[in-house]
Structure formats: structure tokens, C-alpha cells
Image 1 (cartoon, helix red, strand yellow):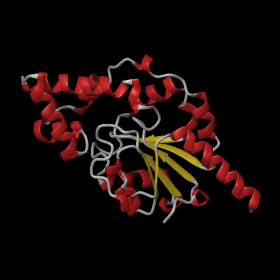
Image 2: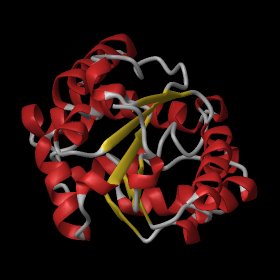
Image 3: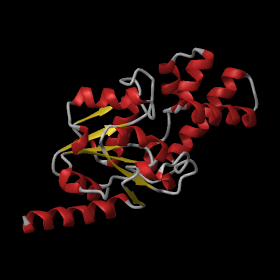
Length: 229
């Protein structure tokens, strides 16, 4: 089914690589600190730490979930360590803020990061005022996307109709559970290293490669629908 913005009254966005581009290097810092954490934990070299890190990410949805499963780590300690990064690489995005605020209906963040980190990112981007709330990995009880429970929790917490929602996400593997619940899905293909992993075309209603440009076109589409209606 083609993407139909007229059906949407709840706009759900992933955070990392969705509201800012990979080129800024923020997540690269986090990736490096994850490797450092694992090397410290296991007493291994950087190469082995990266192998473990990516294995856990692929098998458990996040590196954190794998570490909790196999090593019973304290998640707060891990999150604080890996999110101790330089936010100055982000720039305020007033045009993106305007485009988000123009969307009709509710706007939510759905992230496998934690809320303190997400709030810092939104503040650095100048987008804090654009979202009603967020559902983070702590609220998910550390069972991250694409675990179905994360999506059910989001819907229950914010009380929206999934058939009137759209989920915009850079990681294709996180879209099928949303689609299964009736949401429309938009894959932001930002050419990241892992974005297309486990991509299921049947679970993707629309593919975009530029969020602000898509929001511009969306505004025009919605304005045209109003004018014609």
C-alpha cells in the first residue's frame, strides 16, 4: 500500500541517524566508546572487542542487550559511559524544527538510546520543543527495537491508534514490527553501515534518503489535500 499521509495523526521518529546525519560523527564516538567498554570488561584487544560488539548488536538488537544477556552488566553504567560524547558536533536545525512542527498531530521519539542522551541530542539540534514525548530503552525494560514488546509499550504508553501512525527509522530491521501492528513505515536510507541489514521490502511503505526534503514535500502534499478537500 502506498504511503498515505492523510491517514496519519501520530508521527514517530527514531533518533540516531534519523534526526541527524551519520556524517556528523556523533554515533561514531558512541561506537568507539562501546568498543572501549567491552575491551575493559573482557580484557581483550580492540579487534576482539569490536567483533563482540557487533555480534551482540546483530543478535540482540543492541550491544547493551547482548552485554546484559551474557555478562549481567549494570545498564546505567554502560549507558553513562558510552554516551559521554562531544555533542558540539551537532548543529541546530531550525528548518527541520519548522518542518516537524508543521506536521499535523502528535510527534514522538522512539529510540534504543536512553532519555538523558536523547534529550541532549534534541537540545543540541534545537528540536526539544518538537516532540510530545519519547519511548526509550529504559521504558522498554531494556528489550529494544525490534523486540515487539517495545512497540506494544509505546502504543500503550501514548494511547494512539497504530493504524493512524507512521514510523520513520534509519534501521530497516526495526520496521517490520511496526508494520505488523498497522503503522505506516518510512525507511530513511542514509547509507549507514548497518541500515539495510535484514531489510524486508514488504514491511516498508516508503523509502527516503533526505528527511528535511521529504518533510517539505509532505507539507506540500498535505496542503494540496486540504485545498482539494
